Image (cartoon, rainbow, N blue to C red):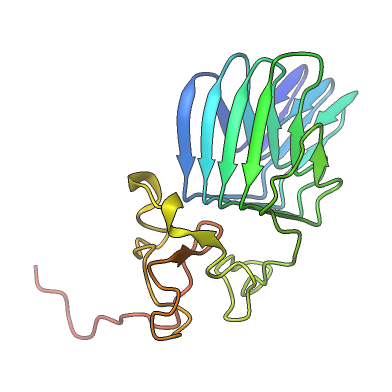
Length: 209
């Protein structure tokens, strides 16, 4: 999506000014471009909003133009709060995760992969379990995880809630995608919107209606 106008551009991908759970989404390729203020190309948590941001793939989002360009990936306003867990925040322009200063805004980011943004964090302290590595997408247009991804089995099973029980493809999060015989299956989940699996079911024959 391209949010382009005169004035303010907030949350070209997702805008939250209330209480929200943002989970298992591809938030990709959004641009805020106005003549003045551009906040949150991927996600903007504004006003006194409070967002739980879980297992999203947030990549290729940009804030550009105007005099203020904050939070290409995720922007959290000075009176808002956000809890990020299990996300891929990769390759966003104008900061991966940006918290506005000078207020009571709070950002908690842990077990996220925040990598190759410009910069990765602004006014945010990454959690002790955050990664900063190439997530190894299948391609520049396919944001599933490749078999070599360091983001497979990267977050404990305690993160599993109803909001993230299924991935973007409606695969269950508890899946032995790396075919390790269940050594970590059920104990750890993947980062991002996709739960890796090397097996896909194919439907053969003609659909009966």
